[in-house]
Amino acid sequence: MNTFLSTLPKTTISKKKRLGRGLGSAKGAKSGRGTTRHQKARGKIPLHFEGGQGRLVKRFPLLRGKGRNKQSRPTPYIVTFADLTVFSPGVTIDLKGLIDKKIVGKDAVRRGVKLLASGLLERKLIVKFPVSKAALRAIKEKQGDVQI
Image 1 (cartoon, rainbow, N blue to C red):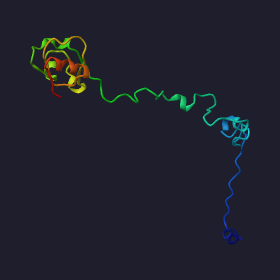
Image 2: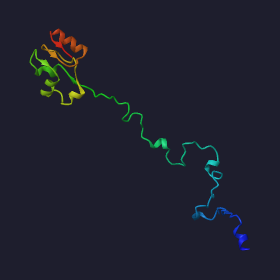
Image 3: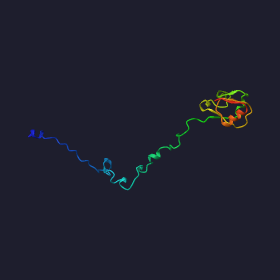
Image 4: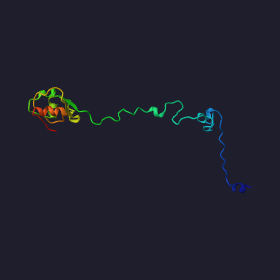
């Protein structure tokens, strides 16, 4: 009889999961029945709804204008005719000269400089940086020159 029992094929039957045996068993309450008896079973709930918690979309900062779409190049220093009165007539004025006279800061090399026509031009200028159209006209009237 021992030989007969040892030759039988082995069968393994897993026990059925015992559901609904209290909340502490991790198989209690709705007992693994999915969405049949929860909020999602009742009515239409939007995809972004998280049970009253703030939506994922709302948790991100406003990316519309914070740090994005900013101009990549900094604005140039603005120089007027009144600023250039410290130079003697006929002297070539360039970026290095403006920095030496402390008319603009040292970061003008990176930012750039532009001469605008505000005020009266009293002397002949030779300028080696960008100027506005009105400033160019005023410099040409005084027999000055613009070299870029």
